[in-house]
Length: 130
Image (cartoon, rainbow, N blue to C red; front, side):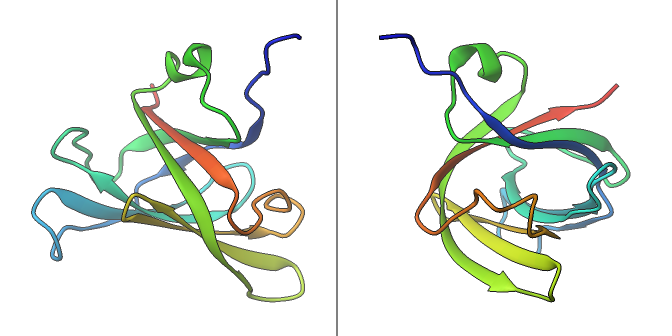
């Protein structure tokens, strides 16, 4: 049997527009808009282990598997599960993912998040862009 490969479901760049660390000491909720797909991403990041700054440009990806070869290309990786979906309009859907209590909201065109289905396990990858 051939080894399965990670399928990147979404990969894009975003600029950190806002940061909120008022709720927890080591966790910051960052928000930004993706460059190519015009998706809105809000996600909790453990900034104790991966410090970030407002205005920083990041590359992020979601994949259905976390192969080591893909992990080597990123600096911050976590595994989560889709726990809620919400249609925002005829074109947009919000997908909510929990990464062990660190939450993520992704609002994008329905076609882009069509594979982000309820209870699906997803890997989130993040790295600083140069």
